[in-house]
Each structure stands twice: as structure tokens, then as C-alpha cells.
Length: 407
Ligand code: UDP
Image (tube, rainbow, N blue to C red):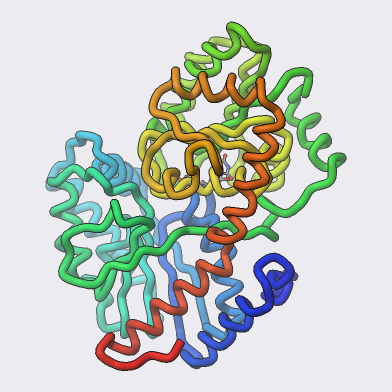
């Protein structure tokens, strides 16, 4: 098992020492994280790694997942789409169903804790039913809410306002709320199966199993099949590049149990690819971490052409693997890709095609960009920093700001 001390080799022993000091200062505390899926998507990815490490630090931390039916996840996906700016129709009955499923979940939970961190809108309403069960309620938003649909945001705002604090990934997402808002960047775990170093043989074995030939440079996007990830735009960009420069496109994606739109978008992507041999579309199971790792390491260029993005862990993962990344200039991608330095930002399929071609013709620049990207991730987006931020946040909530807090 990976121990917290193993991270010292990457981030320095002083960072690990600081984590221990913060945790000791807090003393034994019960901390619960709640979200809506155990696998698939960035939130599950982070929780699967952060929860064991918080336990290693002496915080009694658990991870609860709310249950819901198909209708519930249709409503919450509509919330998600609306908060990222789409027009959606949500009826009063749908809102009732959302509340009812949260009430049912509240009846299932029987813990009493110090801190609850509720991730995203799906379980947000639990606070109505369970307020007395925790000393501190924090709402963590992972979504790109830079331009939310106001009708849906007003509904959610009323619920979220009951929390003591909320957490967003960047200042552009902060909202008008009656409580403090904290900005915490997400992170990746360098020792997870998704990110650990792989041998060339391990990479080759996965490629062989997935039927991917390395006869041409590989352009890769890894994403849930979701329209905000713009897989159709990636195919369009690829076709523009391929007219002049040989390469192949791999679109790898899976499904998340809390995202009912996957099959529809997947069908659209299959239709757009139209059986072209140089476009490979992989539908991966949610636990295909090793496969995603190998694909990212095998790729020559990694794309994340999102039009809205809460953060984009796939970008962080690719940068950590020393890859040049081309990302849509949206949400949290902008925090990671500094144009011309740690990666490239693009605004259209044409722009994406231009940058793919640019990098394919400049392998030395692509290599340097990847090195800079990896160092940027090491400094800012590894899980040790994320855990420090969470420990600092709960310390602040236990010590109202008028007091002197020695961290
Ligand atoms: N992911 C995966 N398999 C897939 C698609 C995505 O393991 O088929 C992972 C991906 O590697 C990343 C996470 O799911 O760790 C997606 O996080 P991101 O922040 O990029 O997007 P989200 O899905 O949360 O919008």
C-alpha cells in the first residue's frame, strides 16, 4: 500500500510534515464525503485517492454515495447541463423527485460527524433532512458554473445557501452566496493506477489488447461521452489535420453511473466517425485506469477540447505524463494550460487542428512542452496539495476568522 511518506520523493518531505502537523492540530475528527457515483468522472477519481490518505493522517474519513433511479439522474444531469449554460426544461415534478430521492438517502444514513463535504448538486438537498448530524456542512462544486442557467441556479442557490461554506475550483465560478467561498483546485494522485509509471512493455500490452497500432502518431482524447467534451469537434479537427499529415485519432471514454446521456452521445460519435479506420473509438469500463494510463502514455498529443470544464483531470493526467496537451479554452483547463508554455488553448475545431499540426511538425517543442507541463503539475496539482487545502479549510471552519490560527 502507498504510504503518505512515499509522496515525499515527489513533493519534498516538508510538505508531508506540514500535512501531519495540520492533522495533529485538528485532532481526531469524523469527516464524510458524499457524491453520487463510486466510479466514472473526476469526483470519484479524486475521492478514491483522497479518502484513504486522509485516514492515514488520522482523520476518520468515509465516502458515501447516494442512490438514485434513472429519473433522478436525468434531473441531476439536466441540472449539470443547465449550470454549464445549456437551456433545459425542468418541471416542478422533476424537482420534487430530486428532493424525494435525497430524503430517501437521508433515511439510509445514520452517522453523526464533524464535517460533511457534499460534492455537486446531486446530494445537495441532504442538508435539509440531516442538518443536525454534522457540525459543519460544506458544498463542493466541481462544475463549470461560469455562466449558469439562472432558473436552475436560483433553485440550487436556495439549497446551497444553507451550507456554511462552498468550494469552487476557480474564481470565475464563484457565486453570489451568503457564506464564504473557498477556491480549491482539484488534483491527481501520481501513484494511482491511472498515473503511476508504466514500462514500455506494459504500455504495449494494453495497446495490443485494444487493437491500437502505433504505425502513425496518435492523437488521444479521454472523456466521458458528453457533449461539453466536444468529441464531434475533435473528430472535425482530426479530419482537417489528416488531410495533410498522417495520424490517427483515439477517442476513449466510458460511462458514469450518474450520467445517463452517455449512450446517446456515444452513438453520435460512432456515426460521425463513420467507420474510418484511423478513428478508433473505445468504450472502456469505469475501472479501466491502467488502460487509460497506457493510452495517455502512448499518445503523441493529447486533446481535451471541452467547451465547458469544471477542471479537467484528463488534462492534468496527460501533463503529468509529459505530453503536450491541446485544450479548449474553458473553465479549469485555463488554469492548467498556459498557452505556448504548459500547453495550447484553442477555441474551435480549426484552432485545434492548427495546433495538432503545429506540434506534429515540431517534436522537439512538443517534448519540451510536455516536460514543462509535468513540472507545473508537480508544483500545483498533486493530491498532497489538495489534502492540505481540505485540512486548512476544516481548520478555518472550526476557528472563525476573527481568531488567530496557527497552521
Ligand atoms: N476517465 C476514465 N475512463 C474514461 C473516461 C474518463 O477513467 O473512459 C477518467 C479520467 O481519466 C479522469 C476522470 O475520469 O480521471 C474524468 O475527470 P475530468 O475532470 O476530466 O472530467 P469529468 O468526467 O469529471 O467531467
